[in-house]
Length: 553
Image 1: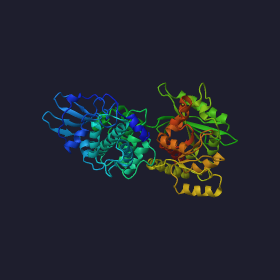
Image 2 (image 1 turned 90 degrees about the vertical axis):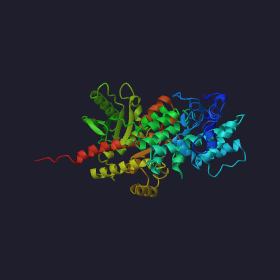
Image 3 (image 1 turned 30 degrees about the vertical axis):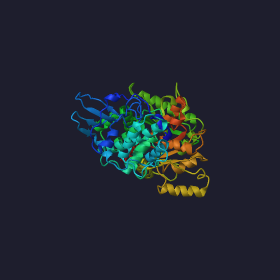
């Protein structure tokens, strides 16, 4: 979402739900400067026609006075959104919410993104007025009070009101997170939260928490989502990464104050959803080009085999692969109850077969395996069988010891991937066409410089690229035949939705075929992907091979 669209989305409007002018509280002292803080306690904000609308129809962050409260004790309650900010008791005393009280004492609450938004909004509202080098919370309060006093609302004032409201929200939420997650707000975790929430790399700067919140509020908020939805995703990501209690009263109060219960809970559910427990694994490791071989298959749960099928002989041709999948599905259904639907299928193949299956304009998901095509009822992930057993076409890994080494390296790389600013290392299109460039690439791979996910545009032949990359990179991606050009926009889309892998690699093609929304998935990417659940399964297979009991004669 662009800054220009922020004020259009959160501009003046909404009923506000506040009392009539004659019913407004006349004031009341608050913690911090009473005169300035009175503005943030309402001073008309949230009343019908106010430019700073109450939560539910207006800007994130600022609401207005509500006369009386549920206790019926005659006190008045002031809100930011629907979060209690200051409660003015009948005797005239007042108490400010802790997060707001701490924010009020900050001398500088505007980061890089917020300062840019404020500069543009202020230039429209008050041409010639410079933004202070340090924008205090008290200064935001002053601007809010001036905006509230204006008799004739205009678009420039609307935008300024939203800039002020957004910065207030960021300042208060920063104080809330610091209190909720003490010791957990590290640069590494903030970077991981940005990625988990789906924000692009490069968001974090010198002040990572402020940068993260401001980007969520001013840049990442979708036009069609509930106000504050992007901010809720960021808070949910931090809560999940810190393993905080989602039922913490402070968290539910924060979400309730902003009417973001659903958005916060949805995001936490998404981020904590376990990998699909039940999978059908089909290994074509024994299949050799020109001679066929045997397919093995297992039903697995959480990375461990629970049933093993009898090997099936098949030719190398694509039709033989499809038949192996059809038989494996039929076998699996025969061992599952009616309440155990099988959705996820993994197909592991050697490099030669992977290249043959994937270097085509149609996908394996499009093949008929009965009444329906494979992709109509199942999500398919392609794996490299070289992590289960030696692949003769890859000379760098020839035994179980080598397989254990590359799988251990892959596990470590995947665990560190969340800290990388750019998730995919994209290779130059000529690297596989020049021997000297390929030699440099192999050296970079062997020294671990390129990261866990590697992408490329054109490679001829495909098996050469996969032979080079798969032993070193647990995730290898490239455009499907007929996909858009691998330009900056394509890479940006991959970066935006990367947090959904590997599950979306499996679901993307099916979703695209049914909904035709290629801008919301990874449907134009081929991927050979290995996650930690798959590596756990590989360990059970390789350890079984290594530790098999010796025969006694």
